[in-house]
Image (cartoon, rainbow over all chains, first blue to last red):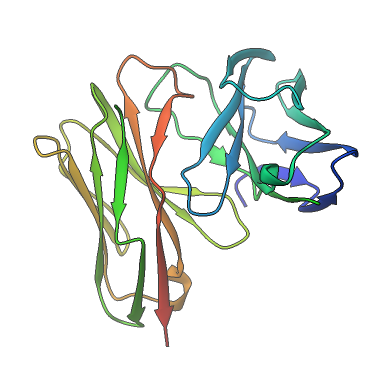
Length: 115
Length: 114
């Protein structure tokens, strides 16, 4: 295990539902990330948090709303999603951002299906 | 435009055989290159990281090479095992960018058959 956990592992939701994805890291890291992984496409960075502050929003639609209450927890709130939002959502953490030598540790992901 | 291209897209080999995966990139200025292994249903796990001055890095049966002049990297897997079946992702970081700005390849899906 990498020390990064995600719940739920699988989620099916309708376009009018509201749900949240949770990520927790037990590594004492200060930076956390949300990525979207679609079939046959490279990982897409969504959000970056450093010391609980959002430092990157990669032009993500507002139907995705992140929350970082502390350095160990990261949430992704979902509402009025579209079928094309179906994907694997990965959370990652690293000691800090801004240093290219840092390794990111990924969680197992949440497989999301929007009907 | 910064890009990372991997080949082949998928590969099937028999257990015990060797294989080589390729990664070409146009990311500039280059900082480092990583290879990640992603098992089905799991997140990516870092295998190796190489900076501009390194041209070979090994991790057990995995050996990565880097040619910074031609902007190419390869990942060689020796004596493959069934557990090597996974997606292998090449990730390049640009110097001067935030850590969040990584450039990911689409991955090579490796299947090892008994």
